[in-house]
Image (cartoon, rainbow, N blue to C red; front, side, top):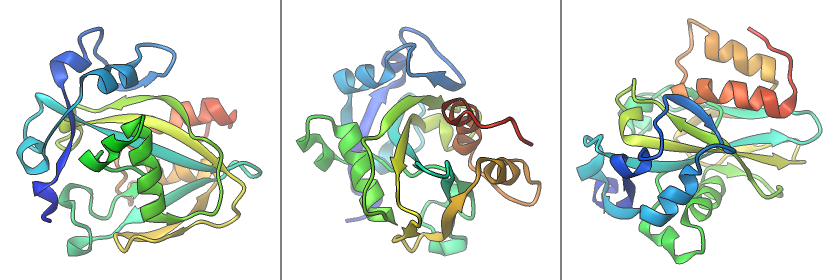
Length: 212
């Protein structure tokens, strides 16, 4: 099936932000946007909502961290036609995520079910702890961000090496927090905004020194 014909989870923007709007990052101990989504979502064809900012497409955006070294799995998306989403081609990312498909609604929590599915589809990882939600990401200043809403999770693993499964990932591996900051702020690298918004909550969680 054409990916734009797939039905994906959406929530009305007005409903999502009824109790408060934010740009950037909002911590998990504030407004419970996850509950708002779970209580009010419905499904629409992806191709129809991609250009309609009155709907937000929730994405579980998961950062993978090695529990011993505190290194973070980072990757670069493939360039040109090798990556299907033109707006993200060639960009670096510190989080794994994807649309929540209708098939994910078979479980108790479709958001978390989709996250585990995406992790299994995109990387080789043998074992990990239950992911923990850190907060939420909203970026209405970019074209792709206007129609998406991120639920930022952190997943700890004792795996020393994680490799990409998905051909749409050009390179992937562990980076230190400092190295990740350098990538985000490098004028020679293109980085998705969600990864930049993730730096501060990640630093707070890991207790890493401010770098860059």
